[in-house]
Length: 318
Figure 1 (spheres, rainbow, N blue to C red):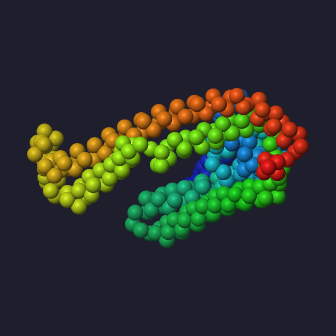
Figure 2: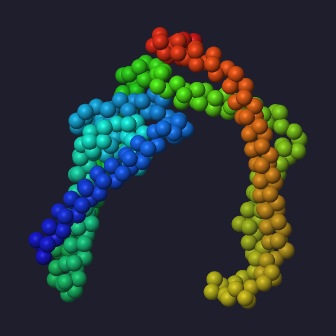
Figure 3: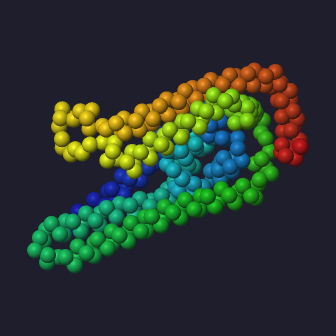
């Protein structure tokens, strides 16, 4: 039985390791196919200093400490897809993921030891092997602690190496690149649109009706919630969860409950009205600002190219 348990544990470790590398490969392929989509790269922020620091670390060959920390300690799906979007070397990424093996071993052993404790307790119902079961349970707890410790260590290490790279190579990572020209332009447009949108939706420029909607919506919701919580006996009648639905009627909702419900839903409708209006205003402002910036795009790109040629950052040029 012990031999079968050891064999099963080893098989599960190998299977988990293979599945991990397979998942990383498939997710890498997804990211690789998403690379041509500019909006995907903009959403990921591949032109931002923090993400460029991650790229610098991940491009290091072999089992670099920072590279392994990011590949093993970072969230599985985002990191693997990002490696594809950045067009990194898949073999190098898989090689950098191999240190995940101790984490898999600890994870599998946690379940294996717990299962072993249950088997011992089941095979000896009289309690003759209670001490052995307790030992396996304790080992399962130890491996769970080791598992959590490894995961925490990898995550903290990944953040440390990213921050360290940002500090040591901040000037280089902040310098714009010609390859990121389109992304930088989209970011510029996004910032300008957000600024224009804030001006339109600022409290000082809103009309009285819109201000009243903003005050009534949360106010009505708070009043309705207050009545439901502190005056529940005056809002609803008594009934059991097992009461058939056909036995329930509007009589269970007392007049106070109907008033509170009406106030709450009216506040929701007022908010939805404001939301629809504000979205329309924001969309119009964003479209107008984008049209205005389209006329400035050529000049902006020429300025950006000159900035790239000098190798300076935007703050240095200002």
